[in-house]
Image 1 (cartoon, rainbow, N blue to C red):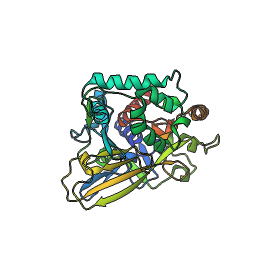
Image 2 (cartoon, rainbow, N blue to C red):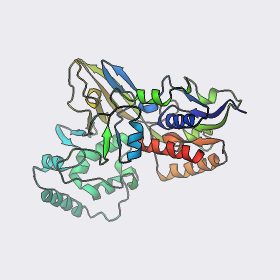
Image 3 (cartoon, helix red, strand yellow):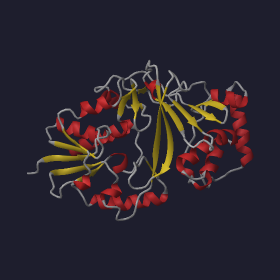
Image 4 (cartoon, helix red, strand yellow):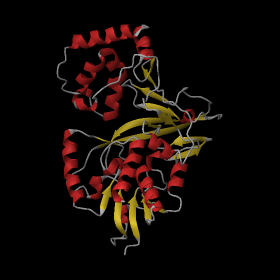
Amino acid sequence: MKEYDYLIVGAGLFGAVFAHEMSAKGKKCLVIDKRSHIGGNCYTEKTEGINIHKYGAHIFHTSDRRIWEYINQFAEFNNYINSPVAIYKDELYNLPFNMNTFSKMWNIKTPEEAKAIIKSQIDKLNISEPQNLEEQALKLVGNDVYEKLIKGYTEKQWGRKCSELPAFIIKRLPLRFTYDNNYFNDRYQGIPIGGYTQIFEKLLNGIEVKLNINYKDMSEEKIAEKTVFTGCIDEFFDYRLGELEYRSVRFENEIADKENYQGNAVVNYTDADIPYTRIIEHKHFEFADTAKTVISREYSAEWKRGIEPYYPVNDEKNSKLLEKYQALASERPDVIFGGRLGQYKYYDMDKAIRSALDTVEAES
């Protein structure tokens, strides 16, 4: 008999939910994480009385009532509505692209006027089959929206020209012909009052957790019947087939000696000349009443070993390499690969929870 039923590598959402549910079923779990804290990229910590989203903005949203009720067991959520704005040169626009955006851009008032302008721009381009992201975006929204709100931001985010990116990255660009600034369509939305870390503390309560431990540095002796691995799938196999590609993010934090820096939690900078993609002002997530404020500038970066991978590059080349790694994974029934990195798939938080619950069900 092994000492544990499950060794869970990674104390993020997938790992923590899996550990919580399996522990409730009487299984003995050990959770390890290479970082000094639990919570993965959802981790929040308090600075100047403000809960800081240490690894970028995490806004919980879902249309899955079961997941909403599940996460509300561990924290009370506020009524935060994500309504980002974008700055292009000296112009400010609402996101998502809606009537407030179009009214500011073209000095119009009605949906009919906006639709007519967009259709006119698209018709003049005469793009039949888009060959790259630039053509795909132009065919969906026309010149003005693309040039001011998509092109610069996307090129910073991916580190490549839009004309060099595959068209499928932008399958659709929602145009809303209403004066509604709510970014998400999901029925349930909010931020946990007091931050996300408390959720993980409750999920992992009573479960053995060891931090500052890298899976590869552990003893060769197998201590668990099964391993749940939420790190990079290619790293698990020592990159023997090559590296999958990721985009990373670098954060530049600043404590500002003022109550309010930008008036909104999320402000995107869509001009290519501005090096960062957006500025997050954390106090607005929880409507904190503090004398100072904390902001984070986000810089998109190419991933390399030793820095944190954030977004998988799901193009054709990486998809083919992923299939080869998945074939190797299928030969390891003692290992469950889960989460954003283990499955090389971008997950919103609700989808990560759902995936973990589904995996628990499959194991039970």
